[in-house]
Image (cartoon, rainbow, N blue to C red):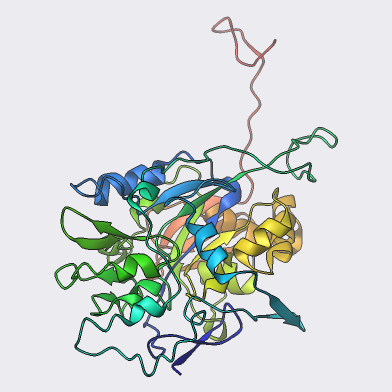
Length: 401
């Protein structure tokens, strides 16, 4: 069978095509703890890319409230139910996923299913997946701000004993530009391809013949059919901006500054001065979304610190507890994690792609691909205390109630 190595699940796995990694891989890290679900990212993408006819239901970027929100409806519950309960094993700190990925669940011999010139050989049908119904795309804000759960330990400004008994969190989502993309593996005519220069996954819309196998094979619900144009469409990673050294629209317009865009390398090629590599491989604070699906997604998340681990492990894999502890240590100001804290400060501070960074005694500095400084942020924000009463203007400047 065709096999590729997926480092996120710690083993080789089956896939329709031979492994062929790009020269550079588009990557991203989102700090969920800072997301306020303002949907500015969603609207910046919508007004740029999906404002045409047939795209009314499309949100290439969306923000869901977990655990009850999802767009398309119940996309994650659907694929998890199909795969069933799956297990990870751990030995000497290394984790291996023992269950089936979406490419393995149906026991396909991918070498025998090699694509040919006959589009009727829709080999992608053997990838475990489903195609959402039209109604599933009609509720992009379902479950918004709906909480769940019981009392959990607080690590916020809320005093001990006064914690909220419930929780929810916001999950911003876009195409993961996966290393082993389900949409590419599912397309019977190979209209979906991965750019060699940056790893962005695109659909050749002129070649697309509307089989919608990419829609069915993408477990994240990010390949979407346009009924007006008669082809599938998806997030393009804002490649026109990426080619100019800029970050994508949803990154630039993020008010919470939760997003870091750059390049992600495999673990054996990790560069500690590269922000994405540092967050994923060195600090191990950023984790992939549903790694057990087998696509090796390239959008990573710093998990929310006020959500029970048992829920988050299913979503981000077995390293959740350690990632949360590391993030909390940086947040407290532990000196050991000063570099991480500086990089978290640096996130979202510039429209230019930060490809290298350093943290000094006073500030965190970001550099572009040419080594030019594109961002500087202080390690400690300056604070000013104003007088409660402004005598010059005969006005109270602070709340005195």
